[in-house]
Amino acid sequence: MDRFVDLVVSAVLLAGLYATMAYGLGLIYGVLRVVNLAHGGVIMVGAYMGWILHGWLGLDPYLAIPLVVGATFLLGVVTYRVLVRHLPRGAAGGPASLLLLFGVWLVLRNAAYLLFSGNDQTIRTAYSTRAIPLLGSYVSVNRLAVLAIAVVTPVALHLLLKRTYLGRAIRAVAQNADSCTLVGIDVERIYTITFGLGTALAGLAGLLSATIFSFNPGFGSGELLKSFVVVVLGGLGSVFGTGIAALVLAVVEVFAILVLPSYLTAAVGFVMLVLVLVFRPGGLFGQRVLG
Amino acid sequence: MTFSWPPLVPRWAVAAFVLVVAALAVAPAALDLSIYSRNLVTLAFLMISGALAWNWMGGFVGQVSFGHAALFGVGGFVAARLMLMEPPAPAPLAWLVGGLAAGVFSLGAHPMLRLRGPYFSIATIGVGEAARLLFTYWEDFTGGSSGLSLPIDMEMKDRLYFWGLGLAALVVAASFLIRRSTLGLQLLAIKADVDAAADVGVNATFNQDLVFALSAVVVGITGGLYAAYFSFIEPGDMFGFDRSIAFVLMSVIGGVGTVLGPVLGAIVFVLLRQFLLASYPQLYLGLYGLLLVFIILFEPLGLTGLALRLAGAVRKRTRRAPRESLA
Image (cartoon, rainbow over the protein chains, first blue to last red):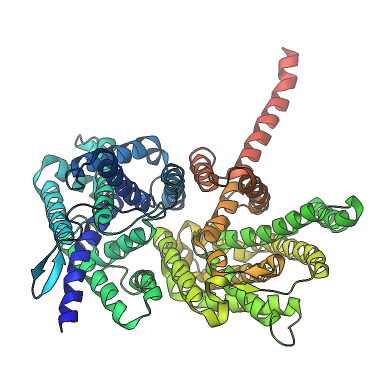
C-alpha cells in the first residue's frame, strides 16, 4: 500500500512536468499548424542553460527561470523570423516544416555535443536530496517545487489567453488568420510571439527537468514524444485537458515499472503515442483549439 | 481496381539505364577497383535501394516516415538469423524472407495509415523507437546490445557487389513503373487530397497499404544485404533513429517525390558520410541538420530541383543568344 501511494505521488509530480512541456508544443501547433520538432532540442537547451548558470555563476536553478525563459523565448522568436516564416502554410507545408525543424533539432544537438561533450550532467543543489513527509511517503522538495511551477505556468498562460488583448488576438489567429488581418491584427507578430511563447515553455520544462533528471545532448527526444501524447490526448491548448492527459501518461508510465522489466519502461511512452494516435486522434474530450 | 501497363518509358531512358547497369556490372573487373572503393559502391547500391523505397511512401504518397529503421532492422535480423542457422540458409533466400518479414511487419502498421501528415510522421517515430527498445531487449533473437556476427567470407563480399547492383537496378525500374502506372497517378491524387481522391474512386487505404508493404519489403531486403555486408549487426545501429533519419535525408538531399532524386541523394549521402566520419566525426549530425534546413528553405526539391533550375537557366540563355546576336 505504501508503495502504491509512493507511485501515485510520483506520478502526480511527473504529470506537472509533462503538462508544461506539452502546453508549449500544443500552443504552437494550435496557432501555426506547425509541429515543432525542435521542441525536444529546446528542452535540452533549457537544461544546459540551467546547468551553466548554476555551475559557472552559482545561480540557483529556480532563480534562473526568468533568464532561461527569456533566452528561449528569443530563441523561438529568431527561429520563427529566420526560418519558419518562409515555409508554405497548410497541408502542403506539413512535411517541409517537419523536416526543417528536425534539422534545427539536429543542429542544436550537435552544438551541445561540441560544447559540453556527450557526458551525462546533473544540477545538484543543497536541497537536491532533501525530502519532506507527505501522505505517509517522502517527497523530494525539488519535485514539489517543480510541480508548483508546473501548475502555476499553464494557469497563468490560460489567463493570458483568456483575459488579455494579446491572448484574444492569439486565439483569433488560431481560428482564422485571414479574418484577423481584416480587423487589424498583425498576424505575423502574433505568430512570432506564439512561437516564442511555445519555445520558452520548452526551455522552462527543460530547466525544471534538469533539477530532477540527468541529461545529455540527446535529452529531449523522449520528452518530445511524450509531449505529443499529451497534446493529442488532451486537446490543443486546453489547460484542463492537458493536465488530465499528462496525469494519464504519468500514471501509466509509473505503474508500468511494476509490471515491465526496467529496460522496457522507456517504450511505454512510445507505444502509448501510437495507440493514442490510432484510437483517440481527437483526444479524450474531442478536439478543441485553445478553449 | 485495374492497373494499366505504364505508357512507354522513352527508349533513350531504357537504353541509358541498361548502359549504366552494364557499365557498373563490368566496372570492378575492368577498372580493377580496390576493395575499399568496391565496398563503398556496394554500400551506395544498398542505400540507393533503401532511399528509393522510402521515397515511394515519403515522396509518392507524401507520408513522411521517421521509422523506416524498424523495417530495415526486422529484415536485417531475420535474414541474419536464417544465415546463422545450422545448416545456413542460402543468403538470397534469407534476404528475401527478411524482406517479406518486414512486409508483414508493415501490415501491422495498417491502422496508422489513416493518420495524415505530421500525425503519421510522429507515430512513425513512436513505432521506430519502440521497436528499437523491444528488439534490443529481445536478446535471444537479436543478441541484445552485443549484436550478432555473421560468418561472411571474402567471396560472399565480392558477390555482394552484384547482388547490390541487381537490387538497386530492380528498385530503380520499379520506381519508374510505379510512377508511370495508374497506381502512381492514384498515389499522387492521395498525396494531394485523400478525400477528393476517394471521391473519384481511388482506394486510398488499399493503395497506401500496398505501397507501404512494397516499401517495407525492399527496405527489409536491403537490411538483409546490409547485415551480410557488415557481417556484424546490432540493434542499436539497425533500429537506431539515425538510420531512420538517413532514409529521410537521402531522399530530401536528392529530391523528395522525384523518381531519380533519391539515387543522387544516396550517392551524395554515402560519400559525405564517409568523408565526415573520417575527418569530422563530431560534426556530422549538425551538418546534416544544416543541410536539411538549407534544402527546405532554398530548394525543396533538393539536387533534382537544382538541376532543373540549372537546365532552365541554360535553356533561357541559349534561346536568348540568337536574338541578341541579331540586335
